[in-house]
Image 1 (spheres, rainbow, N blue to C red):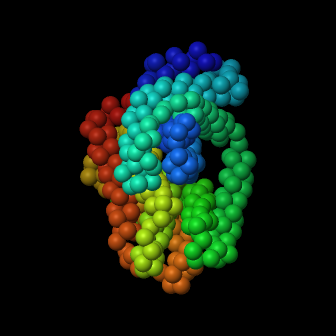
Image 2 (cartoon, rainbow, N blue to C red; image 1 turned 90 degrees about the horizontal axis):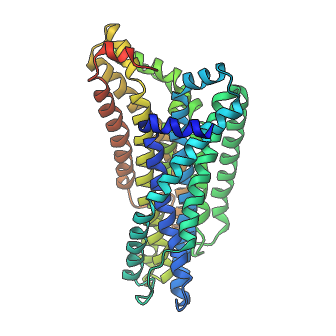
Image 3 (tube, rainbow, N blue to C red; image 1 turned 120 degrees about the vertical axis):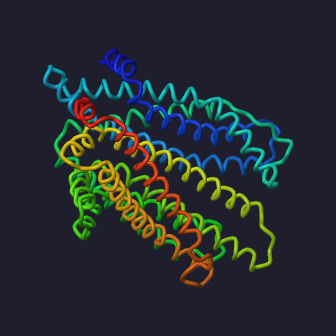
Length: 436
């Protein structure tokens, strides 16, 4: 089956482009920050510089590993669902579920390995640039030289390949096993994430206003709550669709399609909810922390500078990676609907009506993802603000949130409409004749 997997990649390389891009970016992020471990471990590096480098590598490395798994999982889930007819044909031809799993996992591991190897060069450049940022801010001594060693190389390759193998196994397992078992496991994980996230957020009140770790439980609680909402996204989306009084050809067809494809669209809602929650929570909490330090009149310590740098870097990574996840998922899902668009046009729909339908779908996805992402973000922001400043709401206003919403809407609507417009260039008769 591994040989069949390699032939499948050679015959249809375009299908694996999204997985390759996710693996490449994920490996680049992991190697970039884990190279700071190699740099900190060099002989002659002072203790303060080593601590700053190791902290950055540990914190962002954890975020990076989580994001890599979600990115690869979302793209592989879309890929496997689009291959339902191919997988069914293999089963009818005598292939067992175990053989199909080995084929899909083999494809994913091969693509992830190529992506990780391609990421070595960019990761070395990124790590050197990151070290310059720490040196320019005074957090790392300028005498420290950059090093890209075994820790960065092996962690990047191992984590990327293992994430691809695990995500592929789960995706193909969902495609070959019963829906009831999938629903139970998903519900259990979602409930666990919501419960642990709620406990983490509430534990913020156990810290003092000046505790160094005050931001940690609020931030991690917001992340876990966003993960819980993301896992519940099919149910949340169906509940919202039942409340929408949309009329007209585009609105009616959009709602009907989204009810039928709610499980598939969860792959789009996951990165959207995560992006909104983590970006909103981190930026507002960092703003509250910076204002509190400025009001105290005490100059920022090295630890405070480290925390600010880490937060900004984390948000930058989340923005870039979540955008890539959204673009990958939306592009793959919309391109796969070329045949559906062709059938709608042959049934009498105009290209503008099809684009209107796609636009309504994108708007509903954006509203759903932003709403639940904002709820998760607020759950972390409010306890942190209350403990840190004795106020309920931060003083930063709506500017940060509106910027996050603007990025989410631009990526979701832009990718959907541009991809749909490109798909509509194919004549309707040719589109219907395409293989599903």
